[in-house]
Image 1 (cartoon, each protein chain N blue to C red):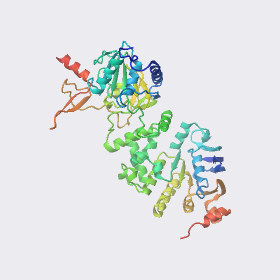
Image 2: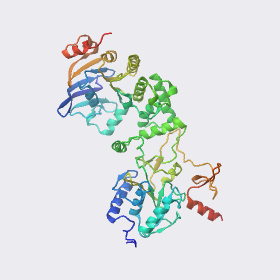
Image 3: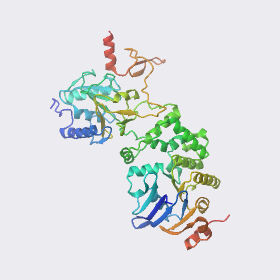
Image 4: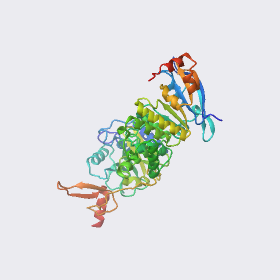
Length: 256
Length: 278
């Protein structure tokens, strides 16, 4: 099977400070990979380099495109990369304000990617937006409300709908549940798990919340100081950590 | 030299050359905003400094100039710009659209069809159609370069969602020759179909330092949705002076008890219709 995304020796430094160093991994279709680590361990740098928001110093990010098979996204032209980032890719920001247009209604937010890829029929765009609001459990009556009037959890769900509307195959998530209270987190995770399963999405989830990866991720990558210190199946890494740092990380979780 | 000691049409020759280069580039790439080194003009920004500079650079001694402001030849802005060029260039001026070789306009296209030996110069306040959607210039330039225009449709979508129709009535964006998105300056959308014209159309934005152009017979398509097509709207009335039912109308409040009348916004067109009827 061809990996949907294959990252090779990705390195990014900020002057003398290392963002991430020599990271390689493969992601297969339908697989969800979690990246955990403390703040400053390079997980966001890795995510941004992989999703094309940041240019790495060295490395390859090979994506299995629909049209011409595996291609290095770093050597693609800007229009191609933009097209990719609004069709086959999706990026869910930690703060929904970064991923949504707060001055545009919920329907407009969901419809933006459709219109950017050439949809020009208002009725169809609106129907699609309504459908997706339903899938992320937002009342269709709120389609014309601005996201500023939504609760934090709703905003995050709206951001997910906005990203998934064009049927992407690869989703990048940066702390998707950060800043939400636990009951809302639980519902959001439930929803994400359902969507990932139903649409057979591949996803990379960056988080420092081990509970999130246990629920969502099939495979886990633990990072520290820009290095990958441990990889493996999620249950295996969390239940039987090998590296000292991973052991510390796992044992630091509060048991309630 | 004119008698007041100004160089012909106020600007020095080097400046005019610089502006002409920008105009030529604009004509070569229809709808593309060409940056130019806009000069201080002896009038405040917002009074047509961009249009005046373009007019000054295209004006020849044998030209006949007409200046309109919202269609009218007799409003402050139109009168002062016309006097400005009478004084600094000594060119003939007119109010008759058919006689003019250069027409500087603020926010209207004349009702009379223009010919291929005329130039229409627009005064533009904000040349960037995406500005209120994306405040960063670096980003809007990139969007133009990559033809990334989905955002404008988001705005039209919002209009329909809120008002049930595309509510934008002026400065209605057009796509030029399937390439650049262009702000036609704040003309009413009634005028949009007239953008596909026989005359050369030049757009000057003084404060924003941009010049762009629509060469004759260039396609300029107003954006819309398949199920909400573009409509060139006008007040559903006839002109109280000339009885015209096809022209763009101004609504004028005549007293403070609710009295109002609709008259042609193009004063020259209206006057000629009244004279012909008499």
